[in-house]
Amino acid sequence: MKLEKLSVKEFLSRARSGDIDVEDFTEHVLDNTKSIQKKYSPFITIVDKIQHPKKKGKLFGLPISVKDNICTKGIQTTAGSRVLEGYIPPFSATSVENAIEEGSVIIGKTAMDEFGFGTFSVNCAYGVPKNPLDSERSCGGSSGGASCITSDADFPHVALAESTGGSISCPAAFTGTVGLTPTYGLVSRWGLVDYANSLDKIGCIGKEVYDVALSLSIIAGNDPKDSTSLNVPKQDYTKFLKKDIRGMKIGVPKEYFGYVDDKIVKVVWDAIKKLEDLGATYKEVSLPHTKYALPSYYIIAVSEASTNLAKYAGMRYGLQQELKGNFDEYFSSVRSNGFGEEAKRRIILGTFARMAGYRDAYYLKALKVRTKMIDDFKKAFKQFDVLAAPTMPVVAPRFDEIEKLSPIENYMMDILTVAPNLAGIPMVSVPAGKVNGLPVGLHLMGDHLQEGRILQVASAFEKAG
Image 1 (cartoon, rainbow, N blue to C red):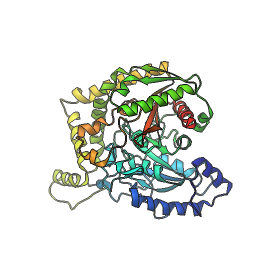
Image 2 (cartoon, rainbow, N blue to C red):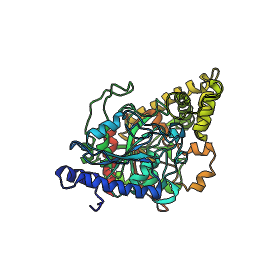
Image 3 (tube, helix red, strand yellow):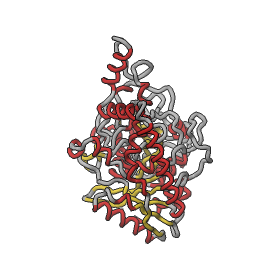
Image 4 (spheres, rainbow, N blue to C red):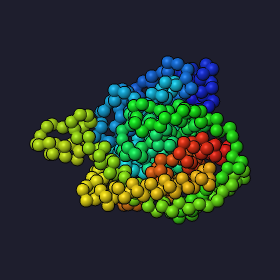
């Protein structure tokens, strides 16, 4: 059967009606996936054989990819690190189970920066995914493989991804896809390989707003296995896509434009004016603690990461070596060989921030700053339905440009996405236009549990063209 460029919505309708032979279709998808892998390397693992759905659920026959830090039963899960090479989980994450229960089929595990440590997916131990729009450029990180396959696939597909400081929004912006990061706790984290427990969120990347809205409807929900899971009723987020945005109030954070390329600023302002043409109103707003977002985020994130990564010591799972020397020597040897340079840097930074004498000066102070930023957002959402800003300060950079960046310059790339991630609010990046032929993302942010509202605005903008 010839692969057709069907939308997710069209495919699901035809699959459930029997118009498409799902088994035949998914076999062709697997062949196509292997071809894309040769060109752009979006996967760490491609499944040998697709497990076909047993019932006609809401995602019947839909091919999905899963970021490689989300556990999949029987499929290698490495989190992009050599320290977990060969680890095959005996269970699937709740989000994956939910998707499979509704009939989706897993095609593979997507490439990512090791444990999520990066903005460009160049810190992956298994190869670097390339941007399908220009293979000399990054497709973003840390969910780079997820955005890569979503951007290039000519078959209906949704990627399950994960964000700690912008790892869904960034790659979506760089590849011209739609990236949805939900409220912290709305989607269960059970089965996620942790980076920073208080920041990690499982979300999704799709070609269209409908794709991510439908996916969130499936993967969201309370999970007793996850103590941070919110006890809120499930809902159908696609219903918000039918509403217009007349009368909506949009806040434009002025601090979010000071770090951004002028050409991107113009594209984003044109997008905001388009929302005004659709009946919304906008006004600038100040989020005064934005300037503290980056240091606060990195102190909290690396502190939690250094704790989480302590378990990778060559004893229970992951990389193991011949037992030599005392336990300090053995653990150090395993971790030196198993972790990449950026992982080691963040472990050291996090361990330092948690040390006696520094915990109060760094970690606890960063938590207080985080509370201030949440207050900033809460005050803004008393006035506005949605906040709109650029997703990233630059378009997708070339790999030779990335090589010249210092670690601090790398971290600065997250300047627009870490604050909403720290606050745990939902956000969606939608394609807003192009600069020099490369996509620019419009970042729409909402109050906690207001996914429907940001999707409503995103959908109206998408339909306006």
